[in-house]
Length: 242
Ligand SMILES: Cc1cc2nc3c(=O)[nH]c(=O)nc-3n(C[C@H](O)[C@H](O)[C@H](O)COP(=O)(O)OP(=O)(O)OC[C@H]3O[C@@H](n4cnc5c(N)ncnc54)[C@H](O)[C@@H]3O)c2cc1C
Image (tube, rainbow, N blue to C red; front, side):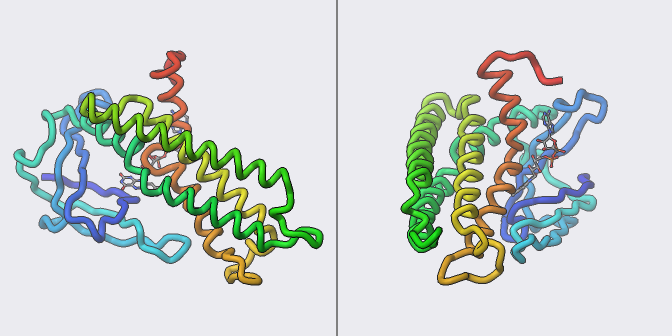
């Protein structure tokens, strides 16, 4: 019988199934004693309460589980071995699942160039500013490098059955690029980015939305600080975080 509550459950209101981690041995150390279950969202006792975001969307829900029963046949991995299973799914999430969003980031950068061409700075288009063009060039090159990292992660997953620990580097680079591109967009929009409506045809509301999304991406799937800890400990061999 499962009882509990989970806030920030992405797309719970649309999902047919959910990955559910449940504590099955309360005496075990915190990363042990967890089991990984497949929860059908229409199981009796599952209550889904959509949450509205700042932008009025209900991307998330809060999930309540009241005396939910799941057969042992729907457990993935052994009992109390759920953290290991989670680390596999997290590596796919961090290393490969953002590929679609990375293509979107390339599109945002193209849009940003359009915004810079349409924004005036001291009588000339913002795009005339060489330092801005250099910054866009750097970001574009870094996006290309990120795309290669994703391809390498996908090949690694194909060979080994799962992505390696470098998945954390992919997630961190993606998040940081997302933040830098949207911060640059807000800088180019300047005062136009303060309003809720488009100003002189500039798509300010879209960029405010992208800017907020970048912040949430830095938390979803494990925060940037946690990715840095993983990279430091498991790739660079630094002492363990206390
Ligand atoms: C867009 C989005 C979608 C999400 N979707 C889901 C979902 O579908 N399912 C789900 O289960 N969860 C989901 N979450 C929750 C998300 O996984 C957690 O919010 C995230 O992992 C951070 O955990 P936390 O909120 O407990 O923060 P905490 O762990 O409490 O961290 C708080 C702060 O402390 C820092 N911190 C914590 N530990 C350390 C450390 N050891 N070293 C340095 N800094 C540290 C963190 O980086 C952070 O800044 C989602 C969140 C977002 C934003």
